[in-house]
Image (tube, rainbow, N blue to C red; front, side, top):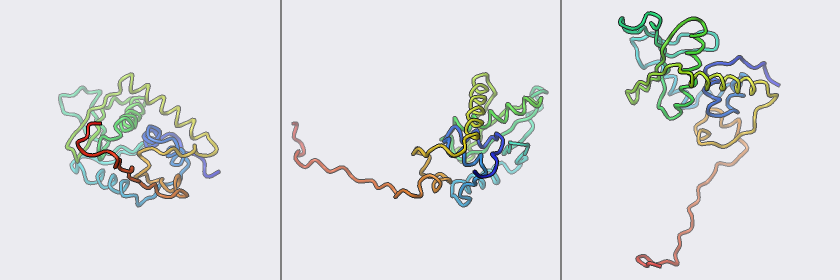
Length: 196
C-alpha cells in the first residue's frame, strides 16, 4: 500500500459526495492529473475572482478561497464570512457539504462564521448556514471519508457522468477503450405520414 492516508479535509468531503474512488485516491496522496483542464480552470477562477478580498485562508484540513468581514451592522459573533469559489452550481450538494465542513470546523474552534458559495461566471452568490440538517450531512460525510480511508485499496470504479472530465480518469478507465456512440438503426419500414 502507498503512503498513509491523510486526515479528513474539505476536498475529501467534496469528493465523497461525488465519487468514493476519488476520495480514496486523494486521501492516499495519489495526486490527480495536474494539467486537467477543469482543475486548472478552477484554480484560475479562485485566484482571479474577487480581487479585493483576502484569498486562501489555510488551516489544517481546510483551504478556504475567500475570507471577508461582514458589514458593520452584523452580529459581533458572526463577523466573518468564508467563501468557496466554484465554476458552476452543477455539484451543489458536494459544494454545500465542503463549505458546511469548514463552517463546522470553525464553529468547533469557537468561531461563528457564515458561508457563501460564489459562482463568478454566473454572478451569483448563495448564502450557506450550518443548519442542523447540513451539520448531520457533514458528519455523515466525515464518517464515510474515514471508512474509505481505512480500506486497503480503492473501491472499484463505477462509471458516473463525472468520469468524463475527471482528473483521475486514467486511474479508473485507462485499460478501457473509449466508448463509442452508435446511432440506432432507422426504422425504414414505416412511411412518413402513415398512421399505423
